[in-house]
Amino acid sequence: MINNRIFKLLIFLIIINIQGFLMAAKVKHIQVNDIKVPVIFEKDRNLPILNLQLIFQNSGYIQDKDKSGIASISAKLLNEGTKTLGSTEFAKKLENSAISLHASNGFETFVIELSSLKDVNKKGLSLLKDLLQDPNYDKKVLEKIKTIRSGSLKRKENDFDYVASNNLKKILFKDTALQNPSSGTIESISKITLNDVKEFTKNILDLNNLIIVAGGDFEFDELIPKIKDLIKILPSKNKYELDKIDIKASAKTETILKETQQAYIYFGSPFDVDTKDEDSYIAKVASFILGGSGFGSRLMEEIRVKRGLAYSAYGYISINKSHSYFTGYLQTKLESTDEAKELVSSIVNDFVKKGVTKEELESAKNFLLGSEPLRTETLSQRLNRAFTLFYRGLDQNYSEEQLKKIENLKIEDLNSYIKSHDEINNLSFSIVRK
Image 1 (cartoon, one colour):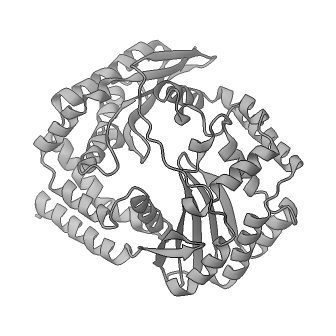
Image 2 (image 1 turned 60 degrees about the vertical axis):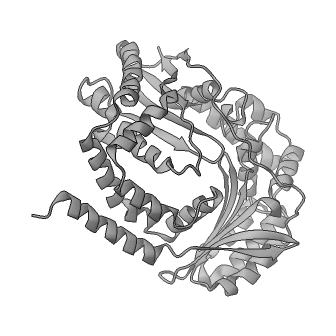
Image 3 (image 1 turned 180 degrees about the vertical axis):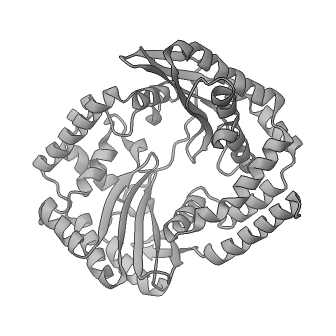
């Protein structure tokens, strides 16, 4: 019978071979209006499609400033078509050719994505160009978006996961752009004007902030002239620099009283790690063992399996370019609130103090190595990974190197790393209960 070490080695070799075959995305630069614009590109002959993303970095709701929700509202407005055609006619043109054109935003990025079959790519690119030149800046359209958003936020007042999660961000990221919800608030949305949206959109849709992600059944030299013609209409006046965000709040607990049948407990703490840290792969393993591996995790094992205090309990280390932290959540019976809260603190403290076992490390290695090919199955997955690596300033072979490091990770190095991050014990809690 094949032993465990040989089995893992075989898995690892398979992963490397699959990655070598699949991970074909390349990073190049093109010159547009005196700006060098990075292009992440992968040719894929499996399907006759085009996938194009215009990703504006440092341009998500980190730029909301004193107008919370404006990035999200601006994305919604771009999904309303052009002023010339209006929402309905523009949507019909997309639908008739099975073209998808969608704007969205995260915390650090603002994205416009176009997907189409290859034989209608010209039409898709033309509609995208129309949208960039002639957004549907109409007061009635904006008021419709604001009404829908306000209604959604009103309903979320009784979404206790949403309430607890947002309040945790207020605690952890006080006085930073992250303390505000991405969707804004009913009050902040009511104050956003059409001029606000115009100004915001004009500032973020800038060549200086643009990263292009493209793939499909095209040659690079075939697609680039089309992209250049598209993006040359963008201005090049504003270059946003990313602000680093630190958790400055001391450990605290805030409880919000609602008419609920159970307690919603969200928790978080600092975890000081940079995307470029050589040891960030260790954080990935530690995160998996502590709270990210489902029934195998410490949090799930101690909180649900052994004590039956919650149906589920999760926790993970979030590493982003602008910030990093540890966070998690669980739901429990009202009478178990205090016990569950103290147990979370105890589990995290014990994790730092005593580290992990060999069995936990081996289980984490097997899963992380064995599941890796599932993360690069599709073109969109591979393009997304290539973009993330580039955006974070990492080499395109970083994932492969990370796998090798995980495979060779020793338990003493893992436990030493965990012990060095005792800031994770500085837990804050946001609780919604009756």
